[in-house]
Length: 121
Length: 107
Image (cartoon, rainbow over all chains, first blue to last red; front, side):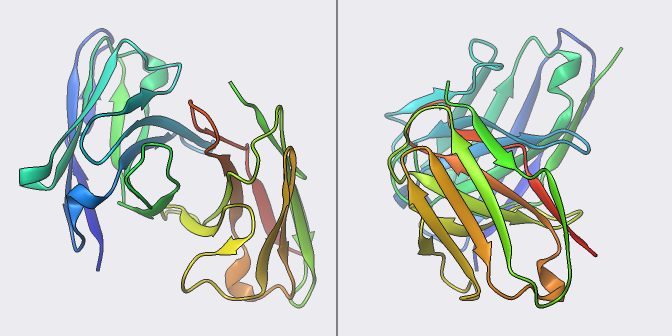
């Protein structure tokens, strides 16, 4: 069974940084792309970033480009999101999601339960 | 960026009804279109990929159609467990984008 467990969320002040982690199990991690998707309370879904199986292709959503960095460690079956220069509108539930194939443009076929990030002074 | 517009934003329906949700892309995405279902307090679940391919384990009452800019998700016979919010997503080009969602409510 695929399991994705996010951690690292919390309350942080504007301008500061947070690092989210996602521990994956139940599948061959380095066979699949991975994604971060966020959701604001009562609002819809926003794709944040995607990374191919070997980190060779990385893409970001417009609102986080230049501030967030996605990375993965295939030896540790882990996905990360380094979030710098945080803004109040980064407040959201952040999901780690498994891609359905190697490529960064793949659909997401399994999701974690999410970790909440609140950016406020 | 490709904008995804869903309609309606909400629909009230009864058990056994046929429900149709549409998704329009601001430019062509070929068949790179997925549909997700999200229930309150839960993560989204993939229903349909490549516009019309049913994800493993998803009931056959769900179906998808369309290509280019116009897509449809149909629930042929609405069941109690289908009351949820549905999202489309294009995976044709970056950034990947979602529609605003359609909430299917009990009539």
